Length: 540
Image (tube, rainbow, N blue to C red; front, side, top):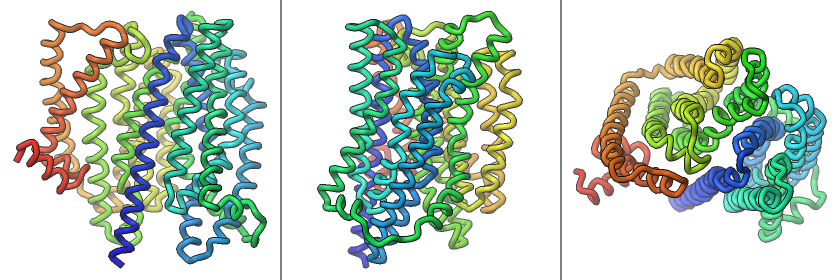
């Protein structure tokens, strides 16, 4: 029994390592490519990034609804059938799901392709956005069926193919984007719209590479024939219906940030043309300043924070089913503390180096671009809290409440959107999003406290301690930045990068030492590892 437990634990750690590595590499590539891409776009850079993001906002939402939580359901079922030695059921399930998801991909790809002109008009941009959206329909066509094979490998507890396919997808996508952009902007016509369209079409090219990797691993492990040959038929219709029913609340609440960004896209330019005399080009640039440009960087923070803060969510369900509410409330507190322990200092750190950090990615910002970037960075904590709290409530089977609270937040966002844009212009969408997500955060947190009987005093004390450590880091590093300013003023991308790296090392080291001294870091890396570090750095 002990050997089996050790084997499972080793398998889980191996899988987690592969997925963490692939997620990190994918996110990093997804941020780094913007540097050369932005330079080659020249004077069109901000507008091009705005159009690219408008296309991607809609596309990401289509990916979410076209898979409807099926890959996770496939993984669960495959794991179940393999446990009871019914592998043939797994293969039969994959066959029926592949057929269904191919049809679903075709359906959503056609909708995106045919409705692209209407959605482009809604965005207030018109013709420019149509080819960009239509180029993304090709990726929507194949993603649902590809995600079934990823789910199959996940169910087999073999996450290497999943991770490798993710990395291949990003690497090939970025290569296609950069080569195509360079060829068009530097060696060809200089048509920035054609370059953006090729950059979005790169999503399809990346997915073809990802699919090829998955097929290769199926063949390598002798599973290809079993998956595609006709075998016993099982009734997967019931499972399909149940999965979609179960997935709907997760899709609704999980796509909150995506939906808010789409709402910004559909209202900002149209509203601003009523209130102001800005040209459409200027408004696309403003959209890029508050949405496209900050998101590339803040989403790395949020995704890392959520992966740290969401570690214990599967255990929440387990303890809730057992009726151990004390363990549930402890897990909720631990997860939130872990999230804040990472996200608060990272957010403040980003604000401290906002100008050189922005310069690294997009060149020297004007005052509007910098102000919007700082606001968006500060908003990261709100986005991170919502992204962790909502699945927690659903892990306790309170799906309806989670959806209802999200609806309240969405109503607030809708009601405040136009007045906010009228009063605060490009800051308006960020303000309405902050309020629109703060409402479900407060309501979900109160609901979790009621369900579990959780007392907030431990969480409040830890949050105050994290805030004090963050403030100390802010003051000390701020003072060091002031001294550094006498010798070194970053200008240009390279020196800005050196400056950001230097301040990040100083701030990260100081915060790490303080969180080790106060034993806060023990919750993230485990007490044994933290003790070893305290001995190593003589902090005991």
